[in-house]
Image (tube, rainbow, N blue to C red; front, side, top):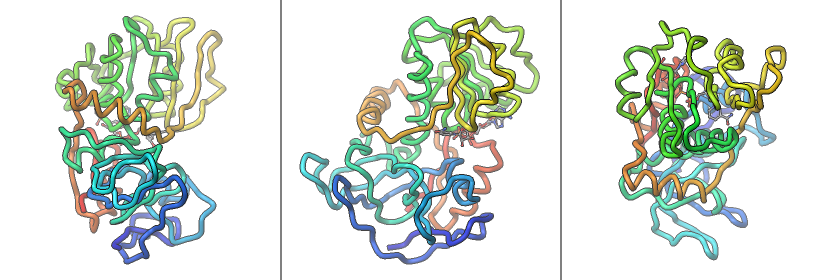
Length: 301
Ligand SMILES: NC(=O)c1ccc[n+]([C@@H]2O[C@H](COP(=O)([O-])OP(=O)(O)OC[C@H]3O[C@@H](n4cnc5c(N)ncnc54)[C@H](OP(=O)(O)O)[C@@H]3O)[C@@H](O)[C@H]2O)c1
């Protein structure tokens, strides 16, 4: 099978499109013919060595797949069924024609979506879902999503709306209309608006880290929740009375089933900025690392 792998940590040039033996599913795993693979910032972080596994080189790349089941387990999806899912971290292996994943990590592909759109969903949407759950999202709450136009952000704003929250989200000026179309109540230009003058929030979702994480503590009401994704909490800025934690996404086929139902109902839109061929995985990494993607990048096979 064709596969993108890498044999040392480094820049985009370490990515190699090659031929590898097909992976063999272990107990509890299904084999999927990959039609499209999602691209996430963790992919280039893995390539650079910031995310490491105990497996030897060459290492596979990517965690998001949409495709067709080619081998299954008792009680799993039928051979020939269209599925989508997220491989468990830290073992990549989605940028390849055949991928294995635990049956519990897959769900039926939403009917409404193409394979490319479906591959854009799992890791980013599960992150948004699990982060909001960790924050205890509830109807009527005020939720702030930083980088609301990004991969995680554009799912988070729509899920928060679905749960009945009042949603504020930050983006660059060029993405403010996009946020409105996603149902964001208060789209905020991150370059010109001082968030410290806004009414306090019940939940702040930090998808950026650094100064954004530091500033987020003071945007919360007492008893509010700060959920951060890119990096560990900077304890030096902790404020008493705020619940804070970093969420690390985990595969969850059941949640993907619920998310798929929301997508099929039309309640959640999946934004794909660009689909590139597998041969252009390095270019996909360059674009992702530049940090300006609206929605998602996908590799089509
Ligand atoms: N812990 C976990 O399990 C987990 C899971 C998923 C993701 N993550 C991490 O969370 C982060 C976000 O992931 P993602 O997939 O959403 O990334 P992404 O899609 O690449 O995010 C791109 C968006 O970020 C916005 N942005 C860039 N710089 C910004 C800044 N300084 N302030 C505010 N917004 C900024 C851009 O919006 P504008 O162009 O509108 O400014 C762009 O739309 C990454 O670091 C990723 O590794 C962690």
